Image 1 (tube, rainbow, N blue to C red):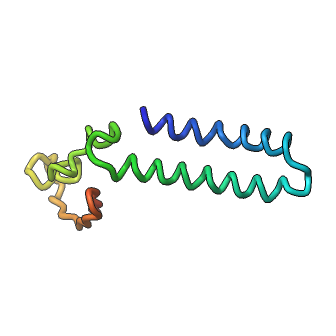
Image 2 (image 1 turned 90 degrees about the vertical axis):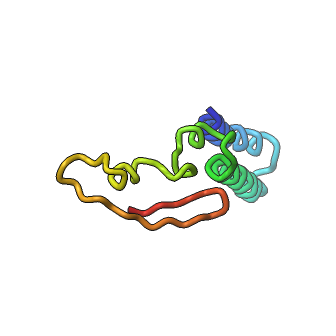
Amino acid sequence: TKFAMVGLSWFLSLPFVSTFVAGTLPFYARHQAMSAWSTVLQNCSLVSLAWLFTADSGASAYHRFSKVKEGGGLSDMTSLGNAPTGMPARSGMEWNLGKTKVRLD
């Protein structure tokens, strides 16, 4: 999946960067270079993860299984009358953030 590829690339890139920095730069410049490159890698990973969860429906498996866009989901199960006996119906708050919906129950 794309989520696994983003995570694996982040996880494997840090040792490669540290090996490259240690082998090519003098000792007095290593800390600054390592800090800069790890910051770049962190930002790229965070942007990739944000894209996976906020992009359109073809971006990740999360969007194929999510029913929030259609107005349904696990939190709506109780409000549709499908709740087990004795469970009260819940109504949640919803925020729309572009293509992403956030619900609080």
